[in-house]
Image (cartoon, rainbow, N blue to C red; front, side):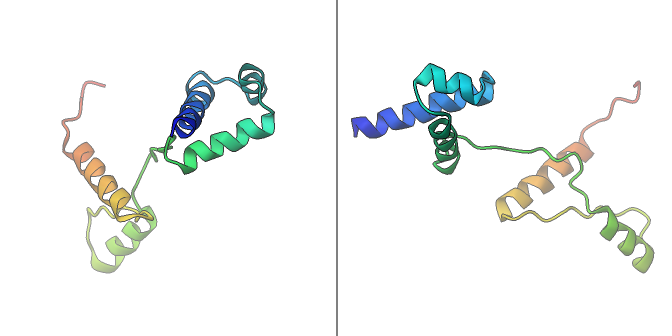
Length: 110
C-alpha cells in the first residue's frame, strides 16, 4: 500500500509541476531523476487514473447551424439549440451553465 501511495504522490507531484508550475519534460526529468519518456508516461498515467482532469470551457456551446435550420423551417425568431456532449453529465452541465449565463444580469454600461 505504501508503494502505491508513493506512486500516486509521484504522479500528483509531477502533474502539479508540469501543469501548474509549467516545468518542461526535461526539467521534470532532471528534478525527479527520471527519463523524459517516463515523465511523459507518468503524466499520461496521472490523467488515466483521474489524478489530473482536463476541463475545456468552449466559448459557445450553441449549435448555430441547427438553430438557423429551425428558425427557417419553423419560423421561430429566437431559438437556442445547444450542442450535445459525449456524456449526459457534460450535456447537463452545458445546459445549466448556458442557462445561468443567459439569466444573469448583463452590465449594459460596457
